[in-house]
Image (cartoon, rainbow, N blue to C red):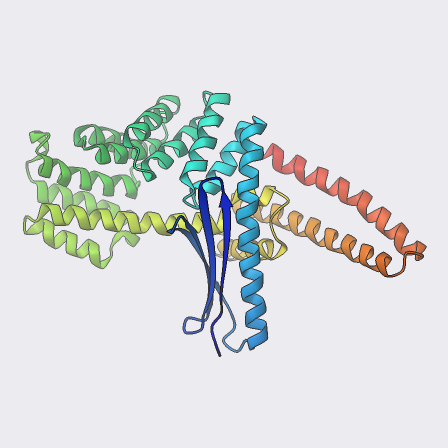
Length: 374
């Protein structure tokens, strides 16, 4: 069976987005990738049945490609609407969706607008700092990270992020201070331990603080063990190479390898967030029916793994409401199609009027529920 490939371009001001969907017969998946000016931003993988027929595979590729294109167009349209709407919570949720798709420019604008409207919005400052760090704007990231910590100093995540930003700024001493504060607030915080180990090594390379020099190898290894104990996913082949490099005094190589391990873990987290936690899209009306079904399936599987996670049940309930609204709209569309064929069918006309009236109530209910949870 031949493979299929679809490309679509979306032009937005000075930005050119390319959506590319291919069927990988060897892996048995359909992969959709989003590029901005030639740079990969995000990708989604959809497995399919090995025994799928040629026409069904082509239809699945077309449907998947169309859904991804619709989502991008919806996000870009929503950006204009939300940025001018003046609602900080909507800016935050859309900014989050864009951040995890690596659409950093728009995400930053939304977070900046959110904190301008709501100066104590520490969550927005936190994600603004992430956006600036991902964009390589270290000074701006430091500023946003400090503000997030000032507004909510007890949050370990905020301390850890600020410590990581200081590492990128080359200030190991300040990084250590923030990372140790993060660990004080959460002694099981694997990410903070891992960043702290990187800080020890980078400090030795930069020769910034001589008080951190003694027993570098043993101190760093012990800190890394704490990270691994809490999160075994850090222990990769690159991690083992880093430990060996550290033991032999190859500090720069050890630091490079550990950063690679950290970035790989962050990328996995980003992909999960992009696929499973797109809160804004689930609150909008532009999401496709198939995307809702995919999300329901993912959430059901996550609940199987985490049966005590309340937020997952809440998100799943909202998904089912959106599925109901989408199905109801499909019913309305079919009534309309029937009336196009025969406008004289009074019973169908009455059914259409009733269902359209109820859809308004359903929309109001969903908007009220999701609005209060924003």
